[in-house]
Structures are given as C-alpha cells and as structure tokens.
Image: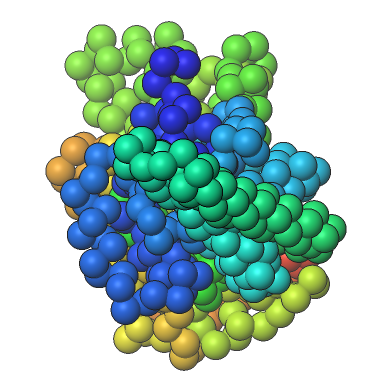
Length: 535
C-alpha cells in the first residue's frame, strides 16, 4: 500500500497512509480529551470550536498553519497505533515541525515504548489513551523547546524573505534592460547583496534551531522515557481491569470511544477496583476447572449409585416401566431420587437449571482477611466467576444480594445474550448493610427455580450461599424448603467465608447445604475450585 502513503506532507513526522489519517481524524473527533489537550498545548483553547469545524470540512485532516501541537499528538498517536511506524527524513520536515520530529524520534527509541505498543497497536482507543497519559511530559517538553520552535519559525520566514528577494531581483533585472549599463550593474549588485543577506540569515536561523534542538535532546529523551513508562503502566492496568471484569477484546472494539472511556473510568473508580486482580484470578481458576471437567468426563463405570438421572438408569430399573403394576413404584423412586444408576469415574454431571449466587452483604462482610481482602470482595469475585460458569454452560445466572430480612436485591442474567457490563458492575458494587437472614434470599432463589421449571421444564438448578454468618430458620420454613428441593431437584452449596463456626456439623448452613466448605484464606481462590468442577 505504498501508493497510499502520505509522502508529500511535511507537517507530520510519522509516515501515514490515507487509512491511518482517517483513523486519527475519527479518533480525534471522538475524544474530547485529545481536543482539549491540543487546545491547551497550542494556547488557543478559545479557538477550539472553530478548529473542530475546520477539521470536519477537510478530508486530508489536520495540516493547517497553526496546528503544531495537533500534529504532535497525531504523530504520538500513529507511533502507538501503527504496526510498523516509520519516521520520515528530517530534510522532508517543515522547519516548524522539527521539534515534533525530535520528540517522536525519542519516543520510538525508548525501550519502554515496545511494552506500551503491546497494548496499543491496532487499537485507536488504547493509542489515544496512551497519548493522553503522556500529556504532562508533552507540556514539559514543549515548554522546554519553545525557543527552538521560535528559531525554526525564524528560519522559515528568513527562507521566505530569501525567495521574495530572488523574485524582486528578477523583476528588477527585466525592468533595467533599457537603462544605462552602469546603472543596471549597480542595481544588480544592490539586489544580489540583499538576496545574499536574506539567505545568510535563513541559514543562520536554521543552524540556531538545529543547535537548540540538539542541546535539548538529552532532556527530551529522559522525559519521553518517563512518560512512556507511565503510559505503559496505565495501558496495562486498564487492559487488566477490562479482562478482570470479563470485557473481551471483541466487545471493546465494537464499543464507541466515549462509552469505552466512561466504562474504563467506572472500572477504575469501582468499589471493588482494588480487587480486580482477585476477580481476574477467580475467573482464570474457574476457566481452568472447566477444562479439567472436560478432561474428566464420565467414562469408566465403577459401580451403582442412587439418583434420578434417567440417562444412567440400569436396565433392571427400566424393566419396571414395562409392568403396569410397577410403574407407580418407578415414579415414586424417581421422585425420591432413589433409582439405581450406573456410577462412573469422573465428575458428576452439572445441573441444567439456573445458577443462583446468594451473596451476603451484611455489615460484617466488610471485615478484612489475609492480604487486606474483604469478605465481600472474595464473595463477589466468586459470584462473578459463577456468572462466567453459567454462561459457558448456557445456563441462566441470578445474583441475589441479601442482608436483613427486608433487604434484598436481585440481578438476572439470562443465558444467550452477552452479560451487560453495566449490570455486572451494579451487581458487584451494591452493598446493602444490616444484619443477616437466610430465609429471605433462599426463598426467592427457590421461587426463581420454580418459575424456571414452570416456564421451561428445567430442573436441577444450583444455589451457592456465600455468607460469613450463622442465623436460624423456622421449622415451617425448613419443611417448605425441603419440599421445594425434592420437587425441583436443585443443589445447595454453602460457603462460609472467614466464619468456621458457620461450617461446623450441625450448623444451620450445614443443614441447608448438600456441599459445604469453610474459607479462611481469602487470598486463595482455589479454595473454591471444586465448585467449578461440579456446577
């Protein structure tokens, strides 16, 4: 695509083709931050609106007379965005832009720049954010090189004066053809002297500008390296935040610039932003357990067990269906989960109904454990990994936040459409406070599974109860709970976070749960790894 390169323009230091220029123009138009930075660097904030109108009407982009700072931003953007950025020769550059060439050359020579480009190549948003992250350094550099820029401007004007002198000399020579020879010679000598003086001034100004740039070069290099290191850290942190919260690269590419910027800001300021690494580790661990589940799929028969999985019923049980007088017995044993089934080596089959995470948000969940991680952070990270688990299995996910009996909030994430990141953040950030009630969230969870059963005939949902407290339930409620559990076939996984007594034998949580564990080391997500093998 060499034919598309912008080889004629000398106002930008990075060689760019038409598509690169269009990408920069679109990004600049979408980013208020870039436009404000350009206005600030040019010292013409009041003229920003007029420049935007001029920009919108020009296909070739930002090549105007007074956009040195914008050209610099374009160069910094293209250096981060292009796969193989290439600097044009200094001799091709407008003298006014030699400062830009010097800055971008230092940028490309910086070892830290390659680290930055791992996050920015081919991503206009990331490249723009990298430019904004270098704003402080650009202000400092341009302030330091203001004198060099002024000298470059003097060189341009002196060159123009020299060209004007040449034109004046030619006109004088034509007008003097009818004059006397001596007078003509005197005139030529006078004009030639003026031309030589102007050209000498241009050369001297150009030399002065070159010397000023050379003198400032070490300072430029050090400032650029520091700026690139800062921008690289910011880009990595933002990318890690996006990954931790489950925002994939494809989703980011489709997201409008301003929406992506708002999302990044919200992620940075989220209540759980400091636990992004924990959330990411949870999700990675869950992904690894999903892979193990595929590797350990059922295969080798090791015996007979009891249950209600019709796909594993032994032939003698199926034979009962052929005898009218035994069909009622079969139905009763199926309802009670007491059919004889083949037992095979590997993980048990997962459920088919919704995955429901009931997350305790009572005041005690603020308590910190090892590593300064709060119980809430661990529970929310586990719940977000369960959301991933449900989506990979094509199952609905419901997050229920609870505390006291009158405090509860439900977040639904149906299988199929991508999870709305704003809703995910709302779920993660919400904290109700207050006391703890088991009955309220578990009743809602059972009702949701019953609703799913009535609508789609799906059973065998999974409820995960994440709490740090122990509280009582009434006998009447417990009878209703057991009836619902037998009818819908759901499983309950209890997770006592930083509260060993809640996981002791004979506790209420123990009575409610089919599978119960106690979590004391909040720095280790693998303490819940088996959840993701069986859910």
